[in-house]
Image (tube, rainbow, N blue to C red; front, top):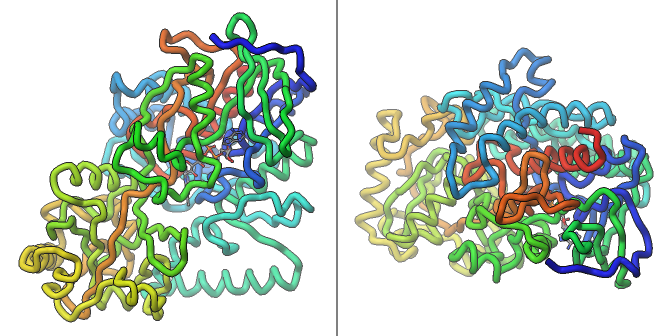
Length: 560
Ligand SMILES: Cc1cc2nc3c(=O)[nH]c(=O)nc-3n(C[C@H](O)[C@H](O)[C@H](O)COP(=O)(O)OP(=O)(O)OC[C@H]3O[C@@H](n4cnc5c(N)ncnc54)[C@H](O)[C@@H]3O)c2cc1C
């Protein structure tokens, strides 16, 4: 076990938190509430992590908002659901039944705590659990999110809040309307509301941010109000340990200067995963690329390696929260997140042989798992999104508005293929023409009968939710038959890795022999997820990051 001299400790806090993601500020608020001193150290120049960039949804079973709205749920029901979705697997030590139960027990308490702290949270009115046909699922969903936040309340710190992936003052429940602007009145009304909100903000000097930026903005604001010490440009390079292997502090580089900082009660690592570390990806997730990730740039994995150095055991490193992405040309570095586009009617997804091989409307993690699995036998990375002119009129294409003129580079560089017939389109994509035509004809037959007999597309509340409510009889199914036809390639990208150090029900980092490393806690995507290899519902990453951060701080401070 490595030991480090404590002699050069310049400053000492009660609890040192590495990273400023989901669980970090929740932990800091707990420590402050106990009258103790937390310190948050963030490596990049912005606070908030991928959490700030994200949808900001937390998956919280049996939460107070469901109870208030009469949506039935309970810990037992949620456990039934997780037993079916996650299950017990020896190779998933982060997702033991004990940990799942601890999560379900602590999650609503964590939300109660945040509400007491003045964080304005609400329930998403309808976002079905992702396996909505399984026992214990809740069709309305268990998604909690933060109300829009006026970033100007942060004063100068507003420039330090990582922006969201949607740079609009749009509420989480409104986001789903955006792609349906050409098909539903509700979406049109929502767009008018958002436009008025933008205009009013200009007049009143508000700086509304939504989704993850609203969540992290609110957390940052509360931390600021309570006087939590926080630094950006403060990368932690090393964990300090004493002669017994207890973690006693960190070495951080703050604004370029090396600082040794003591932690009386412990260190919480909430430093994200390794989505941007191609070396770790090659080792643990071969065939995936750091160019396909939508995570924030700090997701580079070195703190997972550092926790391994002091004895932490790792697991579930092969898991990621897959998310289908496209790489349209013309805007280097831009990733188009196409999950909901692929699930809209009048389109199919095929592998490079021209076959459908999955339900296009299943949840993103399982979709990408299916892509990578398929690729072992038939080339499926990239796969092709195939759609017709009905689709092009009604729905978004790689993030552009329905029916809008597409950037010239898309066609000039041959990224977006278009042709008068499916056979011609197939040739452009290097797909067997007869195969693609037959696949589309078979699919059109399913549309006529209202059931996808091959893969059950649209067969659950969640899958229909991803479709178009104006499409009858199934929101997921529409023929692919009216030319011109279009195609673009897409990849199994991700919104984060999902494996890391193994932690126990108190969020303590465990060694291979199952003993806890004293003074070391971890949460978020630095850990082996409590959800194992599955994504039960919206918020299955941010929810656990917050909950285990809260649990860790309560354990370390003796509040538990
Ligand atoms: C567009 C998008 C939408 C998403 N929507 C959702 C959603 O709605 N709900 C959901 O559950 N998940 C969602 N996800 C996934 C989710 O956002 C992430 O999995 C989650 O936010 C990770 O949180 P975290 O707390 O583990 O890490 P992060 O929020 O990424 O925070 C980790 C922080 O640690 C910092 N750091 C790293 N190394 C060091 C170091 N050595 N020293 C100091 N700091 C360090 C990083 O810079 C980073 O700021 C989404 C992701 C994306 C990209």
